Image 1 (tube, helix red, strand yellow):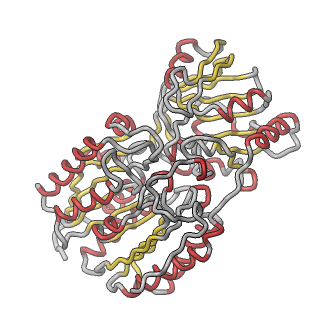
Image 2 (cartoon, rainbow, N blue to C red):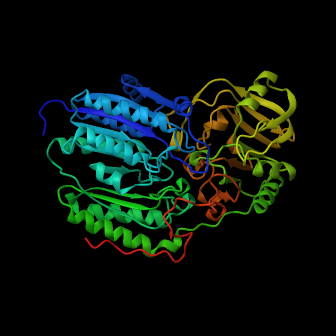
Length: 515
C-alpha cells in the first residue's frame, strides 16, 4: 500500500500477427501509432487519439479517480499484419524496461493485443511481460489489457497479476476495459485486492467468424462467466474468456480462460474450470457457414434491379485487414464487375499508387485503373477496369461508430472510383491499410450508404457495429473469399498450431485440470 500518489508506468506493443502475412516492419508501426513519453498522455487526453482506447480509458480514469504520477514510456500500435521485426521489438522492449528501471514505479499498465508474433519468437507477448516482471520484481503489480483475440500463453498469465480482455466483438468496450484496469490498479495499491489467477488453455482454435458476442457460443461463454462473477460477489476480480486468433499459427493459439480471484485462488480455479467445461461441451457450435461467392454475386445483381428487396452488407471475409489481410484482393470486386452489379459500394481497397493516380487525374476524370499494379502478395491479383473519379480526399477523418469511434484515421490520399457509370459499383481506395469498420470510410468521400443496394467491406466482424444503423444482423452475409483471413481453415498449411485442435481435428480431446 502506498500513501503517496502512485507512479504508474504506461506501455504497450499492440499487434495481431497473422503468420501467413508479410512481416510488420518498424515503418508499419510508426505509420499507424508510435508514441514516446509525454506524447502518450497528450494523445490519450486529446480529442481524437491515435492510441487504442484501452490507453484512453486507463489515463482518463486514473485522472478522474485521484492524484497519480504517470510514467509514460512507449506505446506503439500496428495494423494487423505478419510477425513483427525482431530487432524493432527488442529495441522497444529494452527501452520500456530501461525506462522502468530508471524510475520508481508502483504499478505497470500494459496495453497489448496479445496475438503478436515476431520474426524470432512465437510468444513475444510472453517475452515482453516476463521482461517487465524481471525488471519490477514480484511485488509491483503488472496489469494488462488484451484483445479478445489474444493467444494467451501460460508465461503471459504467470508474469501478469491480472489479464483483462475485451468482452465484446465487435470491440466496443475497449475504453471500459482500460477503465477497469485503472480501477484494478487503484484497488491493488489500496490493499483491497491480492490477485490470484487461474488459467486454462483449451485445444479449441475456432475461426474468428464464430467469436461474436451478440449471440452464439462465444457470447454464451462470456455471459456465463460474467453472471457467475456477479453471483460470487467480491470473490472474483475479473473473468476473461479469450477467443484466440487461429491465424497466428502458434502453439499458444486457442481459446483461453483467465479468472482472477480478489484474494483467493480456489474460487478463481473453480470458475475457470466451469467455463472451460462449458466451452468444450459446446465446441461443435464454433463453426459458421459462409455465403458462396456465386450466391453473393447473384444476390447483389438481383438487389440492384429490385428495390423491393432489402439491402445487404457483405463481408469480404478472406481479406480482412483487421486480421492480417492485405486489403487488396480482387476476387469479390472482379466477380461483381463481371456480373454488372448495380448499386454497390465497395470499401476499401488498399492501393496507395492507384489513390495517388486518381488524385492526379482529378474528380470527373476517366481512366483505366490498374489495381495492384505491383502485386504485394499471392492474393493481390492485378485487375484493370475503366473508372471515373467521383471523389478524392487528402485529409484524415475521425471515426464515428463502433471500433473506430472517436479515433483519428488517416487514409489519405483516398478516392472513390465509379465502375460501370453512375449507379454501378463505387470503390473506395485508401493509402493506409485499415479494415472498413466505420461508415466514415464511405462518408468522408460523400458517399451515402443509405442509397446503396449492396455494401461490401473488407472487414470480418467489426463492421457490424459500425454499419448496424443500416444493416441489422439479418442483413449481413460473410462471403467465402480467399485470402490471409479465410474462415475456411482447411485452406491453410498449419505448422505451429498445437495438434490435435478442434475444429481442424474432430477427435481432439481435453481433460480438465485436477487442481
